[in-house]
Image (cartoon, rainbow, N blue to C red; front, side, top):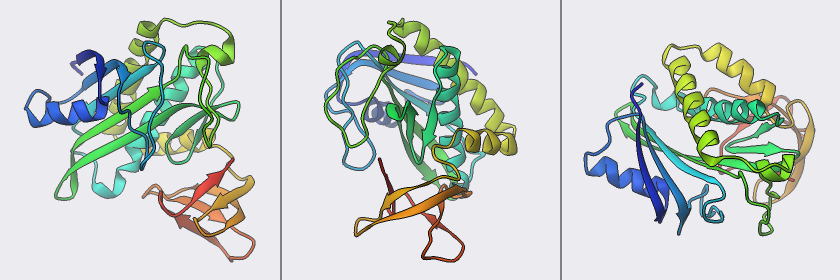
Length: 245
């Protein structure tokens, strides 16, 4: 895959800039947008992404996964999550994937993923994969899910360029696997890294907090949860349920 990279010192958000570049016809596929700082970094929903200038990896990856149907789009999230956990493993960091889009080290958030898809019919026309990876930052505000960084976990400072290059390589390798339909392998490895799999934890549906046991993730990306009050396993979408940590 030929790689193109746009670099900035500061922009509003890498996802927003990637979207503008697509609109301007400057991006076809396999393009990375990287910035030292974001004035308005995006998280899922209304959440923002906090990062000190020049301390972390702030990146968006633009691809054209036309081979993926709309119904199978969560396969891309699985592929990206695995690339990040594989990256951390190369630096001797154990990590897990907290559904739907967080990467944890020691139960703390080290990375977040925000995927924005442009759809044509039943296929994905463009996917903008926003990634925030905490690398050398040591101080964080108080978040609902506590944050950490590669530096805090290892007491070692890292070269941002080395981490960036390694992650790009792993993302591209994962994409090739996805393109070649190695979905069973992707699914298996994703479940091995899924945070709290087959364990009981607390969830919120916006109205109440209840206990449930995570049994997996279905093809649509819904979290499969078994609860004491319900018979069987039920799937919950991104905006229907959240894990209480």
